[in-house]
Length: 336
Image 1 (cartoon, rainbow, N blue to C red):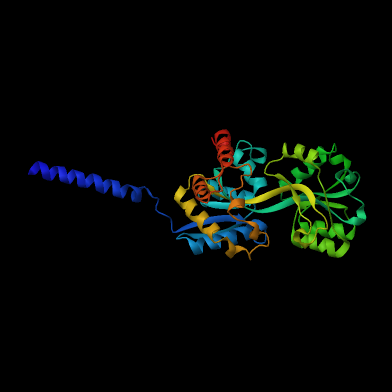
Image 2 (image 1 turned 90 degrees about the vertical axis):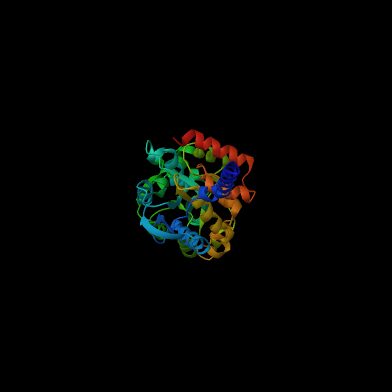
């Protein structure tokens, strides 16, 4: 009798253990996470506000968006473990993850979770300058270096090099804000601007003196992609931002939402799922957010994805064998 009771007790404990194991294995979700973003008014801030608000509404986790300043401030909070997630352009995220470029030897502990809005890096000009191709920049006054943003300077140097030119072939001008550069272009203080696509500034140029974007052909673009990180080669469509009169091939980059690599998979999964299952709710926050669906969000741009995000994309059947291959290669090569 005692033996039978003992066997029954052991059997019961085994069954109970099997039953409870999944529940015990599941990560307890935090009440809140800190979402570090760029300063108020910048594109990454609006992405963080839009997506973070939906994450809060549709998950048990409160996402506190904190506009902490520029790129260095975002990464500092991540490294100090004072923020769980961030949003920055792929121009910063890719070299930061890899520990290359400005971040050489200082790889940041981050993994991608959502690829969101697409922006274009461009040479902006006006019809009256006569600039129709990159080579026409020779001898021209170009607002070439946005001082707070090293990526703009890198883009200008790369586009010149890809066309057999250097800074000495143009009249290189540094500037502090796109507003300043737009004023110079309108008032005749410059003939071109190197800067990402920005609705307000592009509209101001078009209304004042007419707008033209300078195309980059495939050959030079390939050379550029070999030297600058975080870009893809794409075409800015005709009518983009209600401004462009013709489709313009150029380099594109994305705002990427990323997490610290040590954040539990269940946390990332819950937040990514909440954001993308309800993505129509943040469409009104930024004019480009409506194009962000689950397929866009799973786009790999030089940085591998967190396993929690991959789990969701696999459930939605947008994570292909090619995704898996590229993701594994990036992890193996750079995550040390």
